[in-house]
Amino acid sequence: MSTAREERGRVAKEADRLTAQGVSGVALTMVDTAGITRVKTVPVTALSDAARWGVAMPPVFDLFLADDSVTSGAPSGTPEGDLRLLPDLDRLTPLAAQPGWAWAPADRHDQRGTEYPGCQRLFARRMTERAAERGLALRMGFETEWVVGRDADFSPSPSGPAAGPAFGMARFVELSDYLRDVLDALVAQGVTVQQLHPEYAPGQFEVSVAPADPVGAADLAVLVRETVRAVSARHGLTASFAPVVEAGTVGNGRHLHLSLWQDGRNLCRDGDGPHGMTAVCEAFLAGVLGELPALLALGAPSAASYLRLEPSRWAGAFQCWGPENREAAIRFVAGAPDAVWAANAEIKSFDAAANPYLVVGAVIAAGLAGIDAAATLPPPVVDDPAQVGGQTRLPGSLAEALAHFERSVVLREALGETLFGAVVAVRRAEAARFEGATPQSVVAATRLRY
Image 1 (spheres, helix red, strand yellow):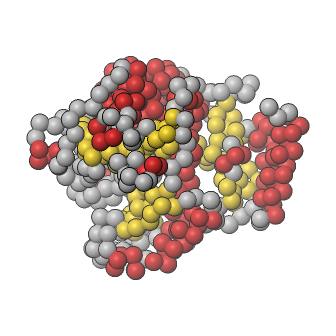
Image 2 (tube, helix red, strand yellow):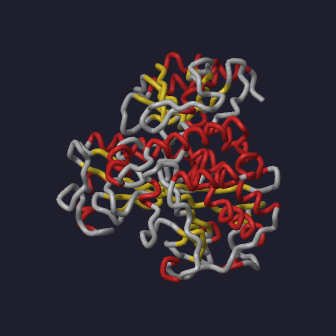
Image 3 (cartoon, one colour):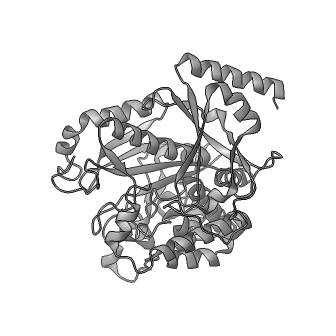
């Protein structure tokens, strides 16, 4: 373990490195319960103090809603008290699309330096460590979808930017300079991009990045979104990561890919279970599938999320799994025989309104509970579950998902009362806020919040 003096020396070197690169300030981010990335910034000259003592941010931020109103009903729901944002210097990244700035995700501690039990990022780390105690490592990666628009009201239409055919080269050609700048910015920041391409809806694109450890994957989800947002602004475009940007159309997902490893072996392949899974992998995925209705309160946390979760839209609206089935909530990817790393599972029901730290931590908790129970998967669904029949529909509203969440013993235990209580309070308030609202009004209220 490094001494305080050694740590101060390390921070000083980081500050000198940033200064030499023309960086003046560092943005420290946390993602709140509503899925909004909140920020405090410090000049590079104050980075040492921020790393040592943190930057003030009160616990009431845990009860902010997506519209910046504040609910109550949990221990953190008062203006009293203070927490400290402590930057993770291992993730310190100069921002290519925001010259003069660097970024670091932050953990939250109290003023005595104790880890705050309501910190979402520390929750993700605790669950990662819980898996490691069993000799298990997870590799995770998010696919991020977004839509770009130009007009002030952000109303995508067939005449808007990048309105060419779905997945079409015409759409790519129209905004190829923009997409090149997105790619260049991500690569300059050390992000390994696997794919970048047009998606289904007008003006919609998707970027997939290489898998990382669970906390690192959540960090990358934050960095990718803010990089896309910054590059879009430089091109006179507005990027929306909301679950739905136009009522009645295909929405934006943020799918989570995961693979399970032990002693260097990918447990998603070369086993005796379904489609080559090992028994541990099958039990893990069965645990996730069983908890999925409750997990939606974390992974699909907006009223707008349930406008996206419609059957036959590749959104994963049914509680089922299937090999390479893009309509199943969990799509299993066996991968090529000679690509050991490629076998993985994709959870399709989540979107970018979610706090990615809550998502990765809760998925691990659900999967480990499945292992404890020696759970097995039901038969796979190999066609559109809406057409097959007999499949269980996932919750159709935030209120319904919240009811499952509140009954989940697994998630309550994993999150702890502080974090669990904050999630319940915020989701209740968000559900009440949109009760009786039309799809159009829900979309208008959430389109530019994420």
